[in-house]
Length: 202
Image (cartoon, rainbow, N blue to C red; front, side, top):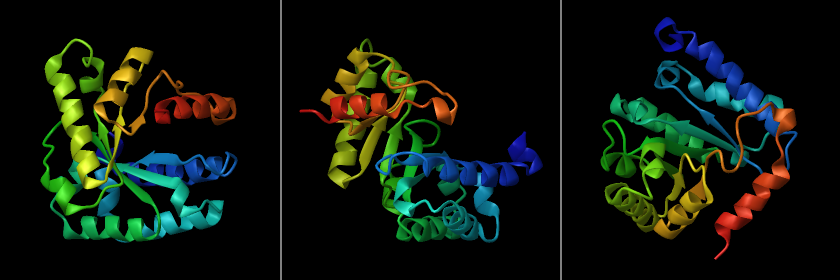
């Protein structure tokens, strides 16, 4: 509804500024990730929004990750790709969300040098009991490794799933095992750090 009415633009701007502001109260090693709608890329000067959000908050661009879906690239807009390149030159990380669903194409990975690709939770959920899902996760992790792109396994809820995505070669993991949505002031970063060490071990 927000996209259809155009409200996604002011909402998205507010979310970006709030996320950057909140992140400034976190340890400097912690990044913040913000999802972007394809509609936000139709604005004439989207780069200005990111510049002003970083400037107002004081957040270094290296601590900001922007998550986009394939719909941004599916529009086939050269301007969209150029915007992504400009954001990356600023130091902002660009992440391809929900890879493996919809119209996912390997050409996207050639079109733009993503910092990370996120493997959809639908594959991770069936990882232990579905050989096809396990093969897909391993293949995407291997592809990311060959292209020097990080791979994030979404929807991790159990220790067993964490072990499986580690074994598959995923470089990052995300899910309820590490924490559930909560107010910023309730975020327990030491617990997040503990799990990060567990993922990176061995």
